[in-house]
Image (cartoon, rainbow, N blue to C red; front, side):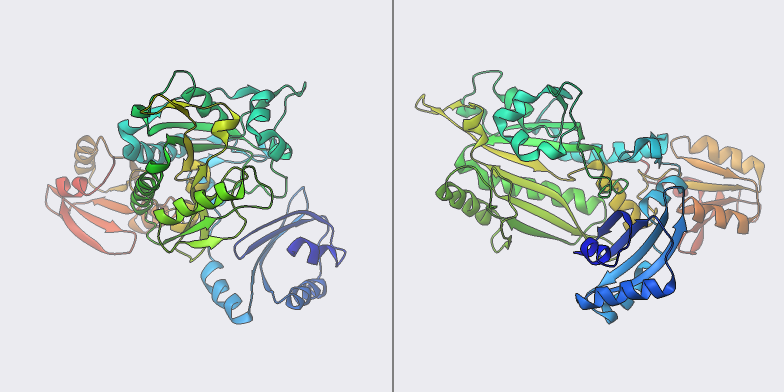
Length: 460
């Protein structure tokens, strides 16, 4: 609708990106204030109000960042809250975590050690909840298209697939068929169910140029991808265990408010309606009272979508668990039941983040770079007024990431804010020989024993 509104005005759009209440336009020519007023009027016609944030010029054209909302009062409320928000791409570069580049449109060009550390923490958090309950694997990235023809993904997602030149091989767009092949490597008994598979994999998607947005929507991204092979009787307990793990991970990251939606049968689907009704009823029983998202399910089954709220009241769709009653028969997946009969298992497709990159982007914007201790580039900015004390601190804090500063306190405060360092240790002469002044980014401060200051840093 937004793109249609603007094209009606004759605006030459090169790219349009919008997410929640944010709008970013890339246009070929600059526009006057009068023309911008016409854009505002056009949005009002469709009960939308828009407010410009800033404009910039590059080799590609003119970029306009704006906010839009369903009422003027809501727009003003959003504007006051969002006008000072830094974009995750700006924060990533500012914190020396990752860098985008025109030569790698749709993916990150460089991850630094700081970005890799944050990514690793997200991965460790996932592995802390799956532990030994999953078969962790690593599957192929380059695959024959026949695998995805058999699963039905090729017909459904042809436009999102990155093909190699001869149109025979494709780069992995998802891992569902591979995990099914892994389950099929051996004859399986009902005693092995639920059989859970997990991998951190790289996916390639042919996203439209105007749709990509840094880490939030990329052409190359990594998933916390998992599949659970189970019986119908095991579905509810498996879904509830997944939700429990998801809530633990989200809470650890500081997200305490989220909503669950049941995405029901879409217009294009496989299987019979009575099978869909059964699948939807199982998911409803897993989360009593769940709100429905009509016709938003996957082509092979209904799913539970998880939307989390960030610090700026924006909602993001992240985690999902999908109930699939059909791919098992399509790809000849069997297990042997108690009576020795061969049966197709139900397959649960699950992901807590959806994408590691997307979750990191959401975290960066929600915290504005003030990440948890295990993820930040530096735990401490050490102001070295007393060189002997500073050397002692560095020796005792070898497991802590310390950035040394030999400038004034006012300069140190500016440095700590720029690099989102949550605490400043002032190694001066006013405190005792084993004490330092600790200043926090909320401007509170206190004198602490050096060992106590070190103990409060959660570096693992």
